[in-house]
Length: 102
Image (cartoon, rainbow, N blue to C red; front, side, top):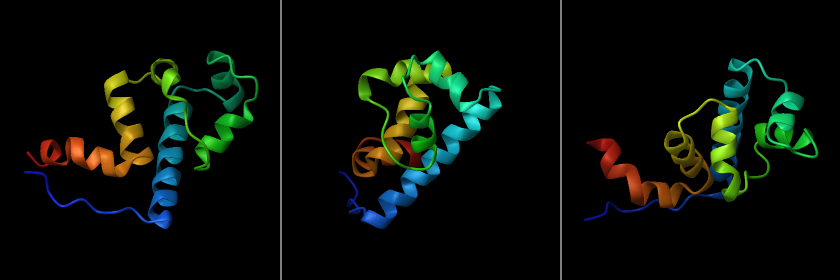
């Protein structure tokens, strides 16, 4: 049986996005990459997209998750699981909370 789900408030969603941005910035910096370097690796037209993500605005397009994971040196499954935790906490809770508690 699924545990009761918690509806995420807009404030909580914003906090989740900011936390995700901080994590992504740390991953980028750990690889010794500037925002421009990462944008070049990902063939992005504008490196400012990296800045937006790191400041909690915007989302990585789903079809690019694996590319981002590779560019940041992450296992794709772990990377996407963390994205889901921050982008869609309710879905994450349904899929993983019981697993994480075990």
